[in-house]
Image 1 (cartoon, rainbow, N blue to C red):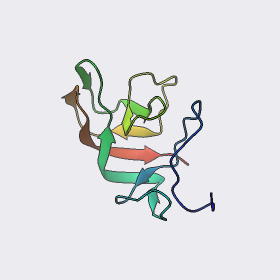
Image 2: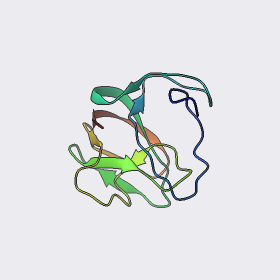
Image 3: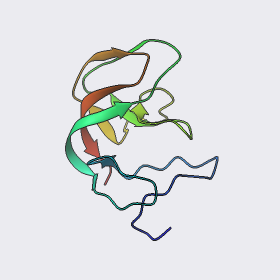
Length: 102
């Protein structure tokens, strides 16, 4: 890890969150993240059941290996992303969000 490049997480117990990528970033490539402020496209991860995410709900990283954020399994009421949309999801989806990862 160079300190600035994106590297897939290999430790099974880590759940890291640095922000929402500003664009697609390849593994080991450098990229920009939104750590505070508006994000036009935030991916929610796929769930085994349908849930409704309400505007204002806190979202955070899921289990290791998941792609995106969700309210499922969030252990605090202060997730690093607040959703700005109300949607029902079961498969992965995209929402607008406010990032507060600082």
